[in-house]
Length: 154
Ligand code: GTP
Ligand code: MG
Image (cartoon, rainbow, N blue to C red):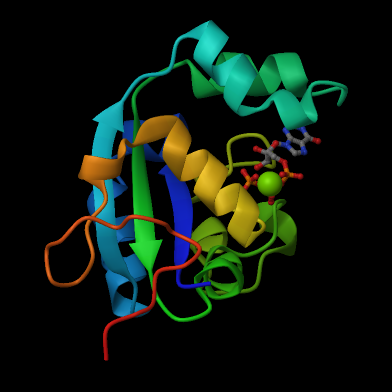
């Protein structure tokens, strides 16, 4: 697919890295299709991370993700999901390749600076959680009707 969804997490916002991270994302060839600055409440974070409900760190994850504002965005590039996961690096910053966003800005496996969707289906579900259809734009400034069907303009 051509779209992915990302979150600049509270730790990276708090430490002043929004601009640098968005710069790295642009330098890697991603176009911003949607962008906002928000703070999740507990119920919203529990719902967004429902897939991790049974994992031991779920409570910690929800508390962390509600601890401050986050930047949420939809990004466009050919092969977006896979390309973006390479750009951000491994979940644990100790294992993240040099020059990845997590290697540069993450503090720990929990406070790991950024999220990237792990599949086209999840990119669509996650983008829809934060953005309505009139908040996601294609490269010509029109609305993106369907993230999975959309093609990158040539
Ligand atoms: P995301 O892009 O944020 O989804 O990360 P990921 O796909 O690399 O990892 P995964 O989906 O498995 O886990 C989701 C998030 O849970 C991670 O980004 C971490 O912030 C957090 N997480 C994962 N493992 C641990 C852990 O062992 N301890 C804590 N505190 N958090 C964890
Ligand atoms: Mg994940």
